[in-house]
Image (cartoon, rainbow, N blue to C red):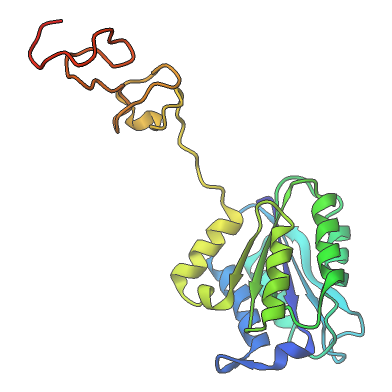
Length: 248
């Protein structure tokens, strides 16, 4: 990704307990752990909170970091400023604001939305669709459910599905180092695709018979099948089933 954009739910429902902690504390820990786990990449980063406590802001959503060149320390300071939950749940407003923040962006955008999905609905889904449309295939939406609300789960699944490359996950799946590392890779790093020049399903690095004609069945080494073992590949063999040992 060229852009990494976090949206953090700080609404009043995030103060509710879940798995022995306030949901808001779990959500902040997810962003903090992501920040600590990700490699040093040349990306633009941003952090936006919504549903803030009136003591923090009277606005429904506030940009706490970026968009600017990624800084691990800078993002951590922005996250620290979102100190407590306590407002309504205007995720739709935050996604609309994110659209404005990303209006001049270029290249792939990864957006991570961490929320319980409660007290929301069609407006949030419409805002997500509008954002995906605006970025014209450049946006991958990743949603992380904190809590166990069935309605929240359903909504966050739908929001992730608005982008073709989106993914829904849960806070529990990111609780281990391995889980978070895998998530960071999913969000930020494209998997390298091994080249297969002849299209036989065996990568070039392991293909002992390069340039096999298209459509020819091959073995695990990328070589065409020779069923009767006479040294002539099946696709060239005009006399299949030759007895073993017979000269051809």
